Image 1 (spheres, rainbow over the protein chains, first blue to last red):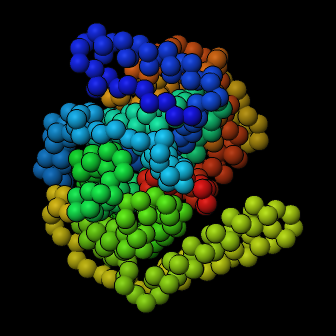
Image 2 (image 1 turned 120 degrees about the horizontal axis):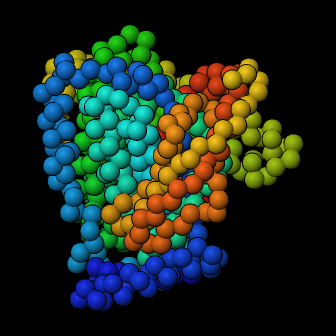
Image 3 (image 1 turned 90 degrees about the horizontal axis):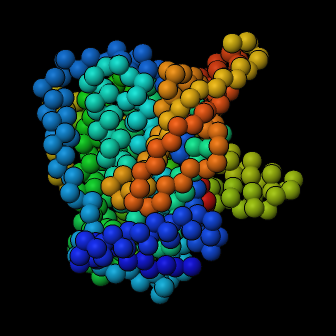
Length: 374
Length: 98
């Protein structure tokens, strides 16, 4: 079911705006029990980490770069950006190709969950920490993520998808990540997020006929938030040179490989989405890897050799292994289980093959901070 | 905390759910200073809390904290790291074919 509800941004008077909001409030609480409306329970994960280690971070050595970044985040240049205006044109959900619609809604829901999980993680770090520099940073990042999630949620509402936040009354288990793994994973995720958003934005600037939904127009400012979050994690890593040297370089290589490979596999799961955007997922992956590698030179002493002859062909094999695993799971039974193991073994070998491609080494610059330039 | 036994605690808490255009978030704060450790399970008691669109709902509730046993805590600390990839924001879903 698709419900095209009117948005408050369409209202011409305050009274009309209130009336729309009231109508929407009724609609939403009704929607909670209305099975006809697709109801998606957000299921963020909950984490703990070594909060004492976070408290022990001392940014005095990089104070100048740190304060500049925090000041910029406090000034909140994107505050007014996530509002719908006349650029938010009408979306014809009714006539959207069903495959595209399915993949696009999946894209929106998973983006919303990712932003939301980021918000939960950052908020937890803010709340449990005692180091003022660190808690302030995480508070600012939680603010941005919640804002992005709200914006995507609104796009989902237009598509007739109600996001359910009732997960708190369900039992949830807290898992544990070491702080350094959080730095590597979230740093890369923010930087690759920037590269992904800006690549799509620039592509659609050149090919506006492929912009099938207005949300892509917001990607430019949006990705600048991702960019500054990445900057913050780069500075956090800079406070402790051990994090980016010695044995930890192997961890960095692991995270780079895992993040790139995961992105490649996931993107190939959405053929209709990429076709509608007029983007070849292989071109897109290479473009995003190139930009991300360039950016991560700010703090990582290595980059992956994505032009190595083994790189692309192994990613393709990994993608095929992943499809085999999924098919085997769907098949079930003993035969399915055996095929699943065979697929997993193939995937593991592919990953090992990617991981053992020699890296490119380079000098890390003395000044870390970058500005978005793509 | 026992090596294999789980303790159950109750803690008063405040839940804030924002279902606004400006911010979509949901947080629990324990009002007695309870601290969550790896492997613990938390459940907020009572009916599902729903915030209609455009509203922030704040409610005081009670949470049940099932403390992980010492062994489970060690296990979570050792193995939790394997799940770290889920922090990556590529807007992906678990489904291989949609």
